[in-house]
Amino acid sequence: MRAVIAEDSVLLRIGLVKVVEAAGFEVGAAVGDAEALLAAVEEHRPGMVVVDVRMPPGFTDEGVRAALVIRRQWPDVAVLLLSQYVEERYAADLIADHNRGIGYLLKERVSDVEEFVAALRRVAAGGTALDPEVVSQLLLRRRSDPLDRLTPREREVLGLMAEGRSNAGIAEALVVGDSAVAKHINSIFTKLDLPPADGDHRRVLAVLRFLASA
Image (cartoon, rainbow, N blue to C red; front, side, top):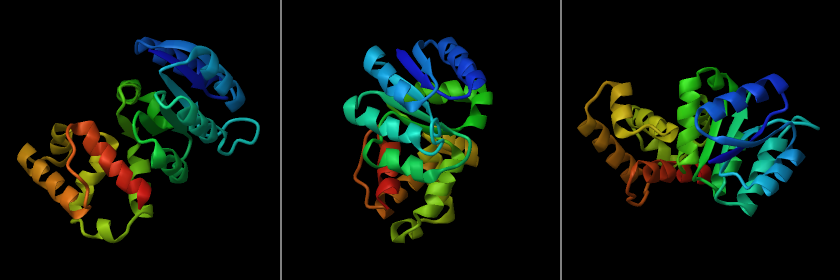
């Protein structure tokens, strides 16, 4: 799969190119601002983009706005956002209408190459990859009546689901059995009035849809 990288820091951009290529992707272009990103996507038609949230000229939300344009014009392009800090508003904006092939990670996660590559591949395959800190902020920001129905343990499970963990991954993180995780998940869907869905990614996307609409 071809990828386009947008990051204004030259050193980080070079590092991202090397990591992305080592993960088996072809890097069509690596650029330093949002305008160049849109031009590169138009030219190279990548399968995914890795985008810094804040880029020149204003260093505010140029990357997010460019990502939203990309998802409108090329809806099949997966988007992985990188941010220096937790800015849940930007994650919510992107997830609200486009909750497939979406990732939002803190830049510090890039230093853990194995974790970053796993997230990269998951997003490229149409899944989701949300930084645990972002998930935590989304949950706090969107506490409403449906979320108040959940027990503390169900909130933990919901957070891990939103990170993209499988049942086995959740069971390992919470040191419980797979059957216990399945029961918690069924309870979460019931309490949140979410329709049945098949497959791990469908399940996570249903959770993200709820978070985006709350």
